[in-house]
Image: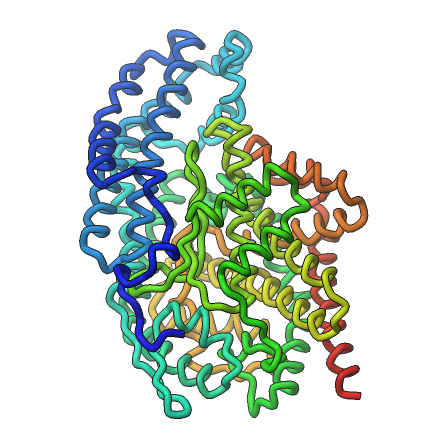
Length: 604
């Protein structure tokens, strides 16, 4: 870890992504922004005409898709520049310009859905029979018709669309405070000073074997969060309130029902993930926490100790370049086409892996239809980073295969499915590392990496999902959401899961302030759904080999052309069966059993 947090200009170019694949220059982006903003007429010329014929509707939908593809590219460039350094005023201004322009553009397209829903019953079904070219749009058209009871007047729909940039203000305010304004005090450990930031804490110190560094940096990190607690609480409360208002305007029974509809997920499916994993995984994870406490010789087990390495003397470091080779080798089983995507990601600078002030925390993959994917992460020379890299390139491989095989309208699957391909890659990486060595210590280390994956998806994100469930329940009953309420709710969620295995502190309760996922609808729980699916799929691959891999690749190519349950079934997994969830949880328990056994063998 560098003694000094770098500015963006100080990061080596080789560690940054090459956005020239999108636009060669700022001037080219500006020209395209203006051209796209002026292209609305290509679509609005169909206003009032969608009842003319099936051919007219097809021409309109094709025009909207063509403009949307160009607009997505323009918006992606502004977004990526903003995430690489949110302190840069040029990036801030560009993102604002892009957001305003895209909002105005898409607000003009709301007439399409309104006119389709106003057509006489049976018209769309007749159009689909008359015009073969509408086949690609059949699924989206039928989904739109199903939403008819919740649609508002055309004027109101256009107004809401024109306000989308304003409605996104809570999320942008959160990010601006977190990435541009918030500062943390450095800490001194064993005579050395360590600068603390979101990136340094979450990618390095939180996983440090040095207990003093881990705990003191968490204290500094939490102190920085605490100073913003009231601002962030008001920001999040505003996000929740607008969702509540919108759900009532549209006549939904609850916010949850409204947010699950675009995911094509029932409340039963949603509840099954949250309830089953929390209830059945908690005993396993408490045993894991007790094992960590014992092996590491800790006085007490605090929240900031949960990611401490169990074997601090065996924590293989790895460079970014070495990690790329390892991941590429592990994913070789997915075939030539997939492998070419992975190689291109690593050799053509699709990945921004440097660390600098103002850069977004965590990791994400942004897949731009018609171009390629971009990945953001902060590299810290530890093998956990290789699993993150495999995860994000899993999104890239999935969405690029989908884009090659599906129209833009059908390329992206439900959020319920979206994390399955990424977590599958983590499981494939673990399998590769385990199969390549008979070293018991390496086997133990790989098990711990797998447990990190399950911790991330089955604990961190799942408990975010549980907090969301409680927050929305309060909001639907018009109960206030203050900093104290949010901290108390988060504390209850953490304590309920970990029980006596964890010493609860006020700092731990502030973790509701760390993740941006709360501003993304019901996204957090989908990490657990995706990992449940990939765990089941990995078991099938072990049993069947190539036929299962072939089905998996065909499922990835299907993109969003099917519901999440249909996609899972296409791969060979029944996500409607609660036994699938319980089996995934049992697998986590077996990993913890193996870990206990390996440590006991070493102690003998």
